[in-house]
Image 1 (cartoon, rainbow, N blue to C red):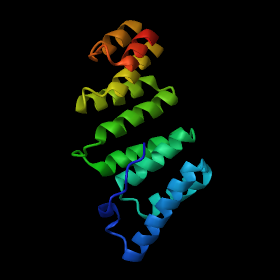
Image 2 (spheres, rainbow, N blue to C red):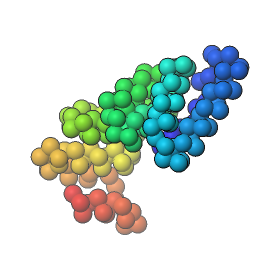
Image 3 (tube, rainbow, N blue to C red):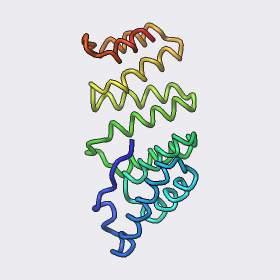
Amino acid sequence: SEMCIRDSDLASLPEELQKNFRKCLNRVHKMIHEENYDDAFLIYDTLCKTAGSSPMLYYNHAGLCYQMKKFDDALKAYKKSLELAGADSSWRHEIYYNIGNVYYMLNQLDKACKYYEKALDIFPDYQQALENLSFTFIRMGDTKRGIETYKKFNVNEGNAHAHFVWAML
């Protein structure tokens, strides 16, 4: 999921460049909507190099890289987003979760677990992180730990998705 680039992220740029930057971002969003990922990737890559102080810009670029299965690029961009976001970021858990997903796709399952756990340290009720951590343990061959991990999530009767995950586990 994309996050909005804040005006404060562009504040260090001259006003004319900020205006052009916003135009480029609007164009990128249109390209993504049209599934023109290659051109969107090139623009995001250029924007990151031009105004590389926005954690959300790197986060969005990483998400596009992930979607395009450019996992090494996604990992670099998520880590840069994490670095720029700072320790007090209200969405740091999202970055950790997504880094975990990249490591999962790279089949670096120990690292995936580490980042899912970091996301859960910040936001213990983060259902997707808990699910992915559970599935990662199972993929690593530790079914018992995967099931025990998912038991930490409070499944209520109205949560059909949670029951589906239980069935998959």
